[in-house]
Image 1 (cartoon, one colour):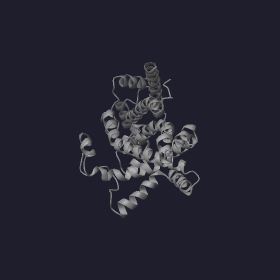
Image 2 (cartoon, helix red, strand yellow):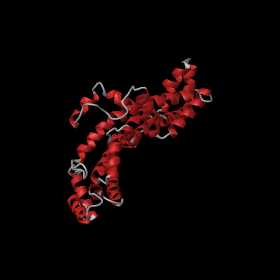
Image 3 (spheres, rainbow, N blue to C red):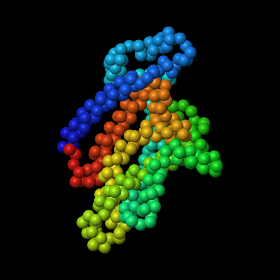
Image 4 (spheres, rainbow, N blue to C red):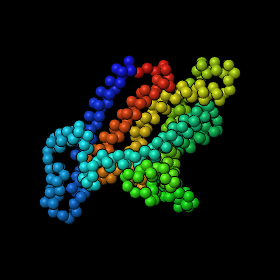
Length: 324
C-alpha cells in the first residue's frame, strides 16, 4: 500500500510541477514590459533595447524560449539572472537559506504556541478569557503584517534600542558565511523582530484551527471514559483530546511552511531581510524572468515535498488514517 501510494503521489507531483512550470513561464511573458525596459535607460534608443533583448534571448519566439527553458531545466540549469548576471540556482539557494531560520522559527512559535492557546480556548469556551482572547486574535490577524512590524520597530528598536531595526547581520559577508552567520552571537538580535512580527501575524490560523478541532472532540466518549477513570481534567484535555484534534493543524502546517518561504515578503521588505520573498518581489519588479521562475519552481518543489511528508505523518498521529 505504501509503495503504491508513494509512486502515485510522486507521479502526481511531477505532473503538477510541469503544469506549474508551464503556467509560470507563460504568465511572466504576458506581463507588460521585460528586463530590457528595466536595464536600459528610458531615454536610450530603441536600437539599444533591441540589442539587449537579443542578448537576453527575448527576441526569439515564445515557444522556442519555452522549449529551451524546459531542456535546460531537465539538465538542472535554471539559467542566469538578467539583472545580476549570476546563476539563478545560486541566488535562489542563498535566499532560501536566509529565509530558513525566519520561516522555521516562526512556524514553531505560531503552531506550538497557537495550538496550545487554541486548546485552552476550547477548554474554557464561553469564559471571559476565551471571548476576549478570540477577539484580540481576530484583530491582530486583520492587521497588516507591515504595520505590526513597523510598530515593533518603533517600540523595540527606535524607542527602547534593544534590537537592530533592519538587516540580518552587521559584519558577516558572503554566501559562504551563512552557517557562520547562523551561529554568530549577533544573529539572534537581528532575528527577533522579524520572527516576532511573523509569529504574531501567523498565530491566529493554527489557534483557530486547533480551537475548532478541539470543540469537535471535547464530548467524545473516550474523553468521558478517561474522566471516569479519575484522570485530572488537564490530562484528559491535553493528553487525550489534543492529540486527536491535531490532524487539521498538522495538515495545514505543511501548506504554511511552503507559503511562508515566499509569502513573508512584506516582513522581509520591512526588515530588509534578504530572503525568498524579497528576492521574488525584486525579480518581478525588474522583469527578471529566469530569477522569478527559478524562485517559484523552488517554492513549488518545497511545497510538494512538505505535502508528501504530511501525508506520511498523519497516519503516525492517527492510526485510523490510511494512505490511499
